[in-house]
Length: 511
View 1 (cartoon, helix red, strand yellow):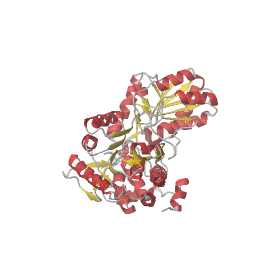
View 2 (spheres, rainbow, N blue to C red; view 1 turned 90 degrees about the horizontal axis):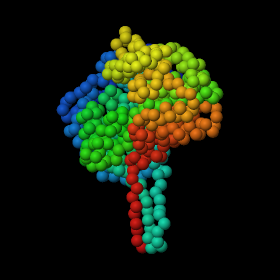
View 3 (spheres, rainbow, N blue to C red; view 1 turned 180 degrees about the vertical axis):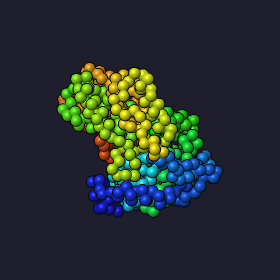
View 4 (cartoon, rainbow, N blue to C red; view 1 turned 90 degrees about the vertical axis):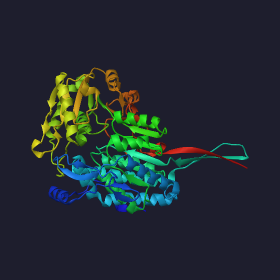
């Protein structure tokens, strides 16, 4: 099934959006579902325990959410295994699975306002960003993988005349998808799209800070025609529900996005249990390099600012290290600082707001501690550096720019996951590459230069899974995303994502 309205919106998704008064009124009226979704039904945790999910813009509780534990994980995995083995989804005709996925994407767009509101309330991000960005990109992801279902081909291998060798791709079985809080629905869709399209059953564990949109889309998936048990959603804490999924002997694969520290735990869980397949998209400390032959410093400054202040800096591939050649340093840094000073955190439910809240009080305190550490280590704040909007009761931080940073400082080496830019001055392109690669991470990088040869050389030398030249944070569903080194392995997006959720089988037929 194809919906022309949805297709048109996904091509040009910035449309008229309700004004602030409408969003605020709806925020007062909404009653989010907080229960887990297991075997086609919303259910409470077996223990009866719940936890509060809090609006980062106000500090107020939005809803009580089921605190799932090991017993709930066992139920969800059993439901997923039963559905997989029955073949109700895994052996369903590709055209039929495709129709369900496309209907699922369409329903996400039909519930665009509701899902955008849940994302904004749960994460503190500007509702306009959720409405025109996150929800559309999530639905587009589900649609893209739905369209890919009937384009997954097998192979035949050369063999003797009396033999036929077929090489087919098969789903792994039960996939656990463990996703972060910064882009809850987008990151869930990056896992659900290929895992479901491949024919697996999925147990999705959203981050405890932002579970509401994941819980909601479970019902939309059922409405679209996904059979019971094929998608289960378990809210809960990483050290309980996440750990139980990682150690479960009947989970065949884990797709994880989050911190490097937790990614390492899932590697351990795999080795301690059934050597389940693990795909990791972890932390980053992405270098944003601007060389002295950059042709457009204004464009570079805008990209640098967007690359670190977008989503309040809570982005795994945020361009948190500005590595700039000395000849253009002063001019570029002033342009970036000027943008930072004009970017004022505001009410996420106002569509005019460009920068929202930090996801939690814990994350807010962590970011502020890094700002204090930067000052203590001798770096100089040229913009921001303070908490913002204390009267709101929420968790806001000014966009912050540090100058005089060297690559040995904590603010240059550790992932802050907040709106904090560290400017590092270098003398040459060679030094820029050396500093850029001097990190445990390797998720993304960017370089600005007008020299095509230099652009190609630097791009090849950077140890990162994604490199942008004269731009930042560009991407489509057709292009893979993932990292090198301790940023993880495996790829989200594109046809390459199927590699995490399927495996090859060789079938030899005599005669």
